[in-house]
Amino acid sequence: MADPHRLLGGRQHAPFGEYAAKTLGYKKVAVVSLDYAFGWEIVGGFQQTFEDNGGQIVQKLWIPLNVQDYAPYLSQIRKDADAVFVLALGRWTLLFAKQWAASGLKDKMPLIAGGTYTDEHVLPELGDESIGVISAHHYSAALDTPANRRFRAAFEKKYNRLPSFYSENCYTGARAVSEAAKAVGDGWRTAPRSWPPSARWRSPTRRVAPSRWIPTAIPPRTSTSEKSSG
Image 1 (cartoon, rainbow, N blue to C red):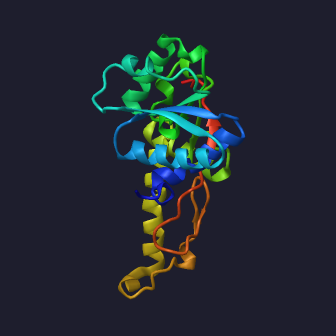
Image 2 (cartoon, helix red, strand yellow):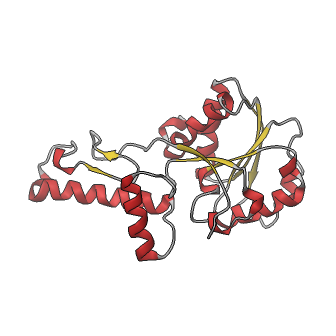
Image 3 (cartoon, rainbow, N blue to C red):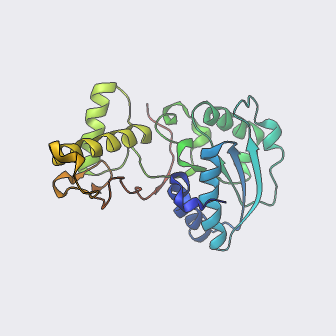
């Protein structure tokens, strides 16, 4: 089995497992995740550090991508779980959120989530049923740094919507390649496989100056979702 820490999704959410155990104090967590590679990676990273810090994943419910009704799965969630960890995005987030509230579980156990569940690509569509959900991600449009304020303002001006983690990821990756190409110039064929010092710059979340061509993973950030005013 692959080490979840070596996979991007696993690395994103490994710190959240520790946070859930140490800070939130959960001992038993049930998982509800989409059944595909990204879901496996996210759950794997969360599970490893959650259990390394004394927690226990007591249940995993894998949801097919063609799901139209979460109710049969929600009815199977173990009542002895301290919290439920959900991995969803897009339409699956909207469907899950609505049925989570209708099931009555919202008032009985906490919901924590992978970052895509409350990412800005879907957050404006969520309602009061999602207030209080704690999720972890390595980017949020609400990140209050000078670099992100500039990025967010430019993105909103051009696209008339909030940037999501997908927006920031693609921007950072493309600009990293662009800055390196400009620094190397015509000598790219013989350039050493190290990051040119002149290519260092500040992304919306951090200073980009890795020691290899492939940018290092950005550490996750933990945030509590609130209803969007938009």
